[in-house]
Image (tube, rainbow, N blue to C red):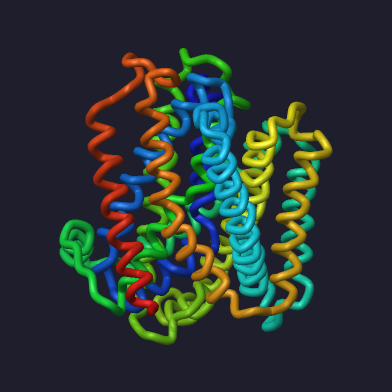
Length: 396
């Protein structure tokens, strides 16, 4: 029971990255490339575990949000303002794009469950659910709501992957033998961008402050984070494994995937995956505005609780943009791909800043600095920069 009480921030991070973007890209990756891109997801999960641990460590040690720590640590006024402006723009604009994808994805899940072919006003339903949970303004309510949704989502996707009876030999090969070509590069970048989410770094450092306010809880926070992200990664892999059963270029959404799986286990396929997509849409529709509000709060030094006016105005703004874009009926896949690709390009910048902070002795003393982790972060930064540059060159 004591361990159950400690569940929270890590699960919310898992809830944030297993959104419709993850579901969609994993579906496309599995359907188009089989198991061969599982290595990219494994790399992403390792990177997420490492970077999120650094963010939560900074949050617990300083008892401040990541954006606030960055602001206080950069002495040059010009550089300080440039970095904070970059963070604000990247997180607010990025999260607005994410929110559109989240709400659209949740809407697609609802359509799958109801049998409706048109989006109609379903984005308003998703937006209203997210608004209600956020407006209550209670960390415990948000935490418990998301934990329940993550459980539902995980069971849905894991069940589908087990039923498809994957080829274990090909699965292991896909996990540990990297393959990359011009056709798969954008999908690889997307998988990284949808798993190692920059805004989650800011969200995690703020959530651990809400949950705990003592460095004594560092071990507990690290274990909770590791287990939650690992399980989240397994769920993402389950989606690729499921999609690998239905190979073909015509798989663009989880609904296409469900239709392809119908011969395996009948009409129930669309309901299994529809529930998972709906739950993932709701969880991410809550966490994206929440993260944006925390970042704004840290950057501007706002005081007060989750119920403060400034805090609410930020998440309401992000939520409204997400609903509005969803109602425009733009291509949801393109919206989701844009958000994930942008994220993968932003990631190296945020990772470099995080790497600098964690090795700043005025913030983190030697007792909380780990050499092995520094090596891993350096490798992660190098890989993301190389892939990002290749991705840009591929688009030119």
